[in-house]
Length: 369
Ligand code: CP3
Image 1 (cartoon, rainbow, N blue to C red):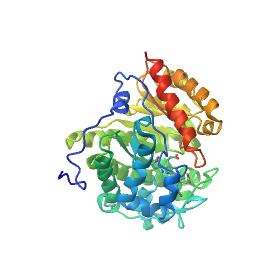
Image 2 (cartoon, protein in one colour):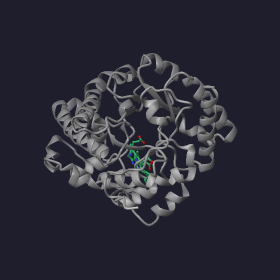
Image 3 (tube, rainbow, N blue to C red):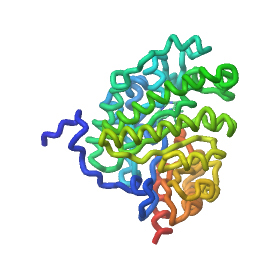
């Protein structure tokens, strides 16, 4: 036919809306399931494509990003209930003017991280999000078409504290002492930086929905490095601004007000606050007991998670057993979106992931009969 795949219109009709219904607290026949980092190194087809391209080259090429987004959907078929656009949380620091490299075996590296607030002069003053990150929008639009309505497509961002931490640490870190020392030495400048990131994040998420994203996830991967008090001061206000302003903007622009998920890894102490932050879904890492999370969130949100990603190394019987317990712990009447408690690890056997997906779908349907 004559549909233009570069335009965010005439998208195929969605055939599987389970995750959207679960997010909104509507009745579900079983728990929807997807996997953080489902497009990644554990898949041989990913490795094959990655051999010939650098990581950020793939992110910036909509055809390649789309191809990788579809890989797990093609492989697992109806065992997955959502897709997530292939990209990275670090595209925002790049858009702000910092260089980020993805070093094989090491992860992300900033050759020139922020050392003191004097380094703000190196940041772009007014970031034109469309100009800098329009490649993500193009990838989303293309992927919405190519998904053919099989499952909804997630857009995402890194939360401001996590991005600030990367911008100062210059990469992964065990203690985050550089980033956290900013909070003690330069609290006002830290907040100014968090606000700059927040403004871009809001713009970027609205743009992703305009381009075709049907759900949004915010990754506060380093939330758990903050004390409860510091989380309230340096993470939560920005996470809240993002959901509130994104939803306001979507409504005022006549766009679909899509469900939003917050994943604050390690921030078990913030569950109650997060459940009152205008997100439909609160994502749990594996250290949180689902019953405890239900209680702390007062049953007002859908919960996502939360099998320990390393359980996928336990062999097929152990995977079945642990996944069954996990599904039952979330219970039958409540809103549950199954996932791992963090991203899938790169050396997992794709067949073992399949056992997890099959078990979740089977058991979560059985307990609802
Ligand atoms: O399938 C998907 O989930 C979509 C794509 C996606 C990637 N990164 C691709 C990726 C998503 C949603 C992310 C989010 C992301 N990126 C987070 C938040 C989630 C989390 O894990 O807490 C973070 C912290 C990052 C930053 C980042 N990117 C790190 C720390 C690393 C290196 C760690 C690792 O696994 O190697 C990356 C690299 C990265 N992002 C890869 C992929 C597929 C592997 C890169 C490669 O091929 O070398």
